[in-house]
Length: 125
Image (tube, rainbow, N blue to C red):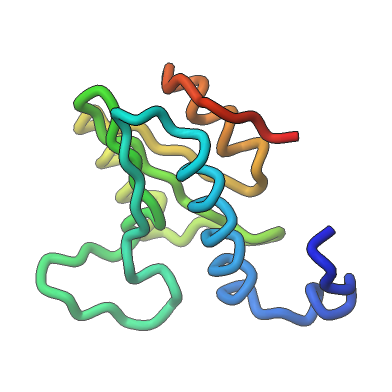
């Protein structure tokens, strides 16, 4: 456990839970990805209207680039659902040859990376 009591976590807004989860996923990827991979967060997933030129609604939360391929992670807090914009953009990314995974827990991060053939240096325990 992270020291936060269950009642406090239950009251946290989904956006806050997803943001905290994203930080933990980023730390895991920094340790686990091979040296020839990079990961980064993509701003705009906090339900605030993103007005950056070129931003597309539904863009996944994180990206991993490895072996010349784009891999996207859509992070969802417990009970979180994909928006119609996310469903549509994920389908478009897949059509373009990118990889996309919906991540609800640490085990999903490891499973997605391994299913994509990314050799990880660490495991979820």
